[in-house]
Length: 284
Length: 272
Ligand SMILES: Nc1ncnc2c1ncn2[C@@H]1O[C@H](COP(=O)(O)OP(=O)(O)O)[C@@H](O)[C@H]1O
Ligand SMILES: [Mg+2]
Image 1 (cartoon, chains in turn purple, yellow):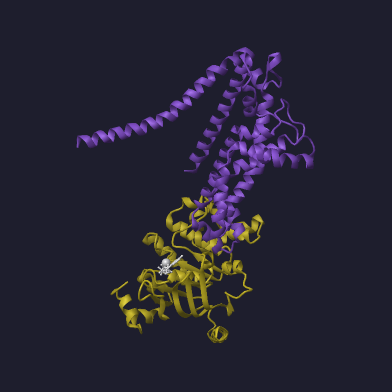
Image 2: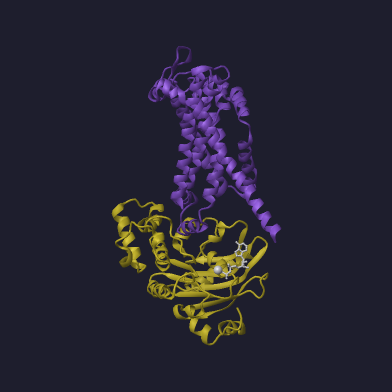
């Protein structure tokens, strides 16, 4: 009796410790990045740091707006390409494909999620870069290549969650719609998708978070110039890729500025997590 | 052989003038034969009730009358189903139009997560109607026909799912009426709602039968006796044997003087 009780307690503590690790981890990372990065806000000024386009560490100019814009450009394009493709994949898997085809496509989509991002980078350099260079000119390293690679990378995230959301739409809605003489397409478009709307939005936000945080593949294909791209194929720098590239040699204020960019990224992720919570709360 | 049956069916239909004529229907879920040799004529502007113990293929049969079973993988139909003398399983049949003509009400009221107005407007819209004034008219007409207009006319913008269970079921009936069907198939429409709401739906059916052909599946024998003009009794002798149509006649006769011993047993509550 006593032993059983003791064992219950012990198990509870183990689970509690595991759960706490997550919280402690987040806190530690946040505190560490803040301590390392905060001085740049004092030194340069928050507004100047966030809203100046002038990034030249050798001249002590630390404005990161170029990279914030870069990150958002890269993410927005990746979403514009990837989200519709992912949602259509989800529709195909849940509403259209016969079981046999599902069994083929679903593992392929899931596998896409398991490919390391450096491999996506290789794929980008070896295949997408030459294609973009030939078709659109430029070096091939730049915005468009980044969009294509990221669109493929976020596809499994968005597709998998969207498929769950679509499957959660009660069968009775579909039957009612078909029962009134709606076609399959009308049923999907007018009943199933609106009913799954919040789930689809949540999936897209998650994909957005994934895209904005992605580093390795993006670093390999973006060109990473500290300028706002003037064309689709122009080189562009994202917060993540610039941090990763500069970190190996930066020191002093330059390094502090990189941590400051880290804080900004952190805030963006927080914002996305909050947004997902908000959307999914509205659902229930 | 199939051709001959088909020709017989059409001939019989010409004589009877029934709205729906089913001849020698067998229905399969994959390898499982769920229905065998069902032959029945559904009368125009009348209410026909399907009764029988649960699992005896009532829903299956109902859903084969507007090809809803097509949506389930691996199902197969043999035999003939004629709607106004035309085979609904023929190659050239437009299933979408068939389902508009033969509407369906389900056991669980299933309004879309849309406003009351949009629920009704859904059908006309998918069939191409855009004009707002015409839609307004159809919405009011359909709700009126479904005896729901008075209760909801001031809250058409509210979610259909906020209505009570009985109102939701009438909303679903109105939604089907909005696409001008000829036949209404109702699969245990009252089994999930209270007696007062059931009463309202039964009154409604009685009113609607002047303009529609109605088929209702019910496990409630009193309901069948109250509302229907004709009654069909289905029975599967065993769960893995196909169900058959045991008896079909005017409701009065089925309930007071059934021909088959099994019908009598079921009606008097001796099994099922
Ligand atoms: N989707 C399905 N797949 C396989 N078998 C089914 C399916 N739906 C119903 N059945 C079987 O067909 C028979 C008739 O079912 P059903 O038409 O639902 O009966 P009822 O409506 O009279 O209760 C039952 O044996 C049932 O198990
Ligand atoms: Mg049933």
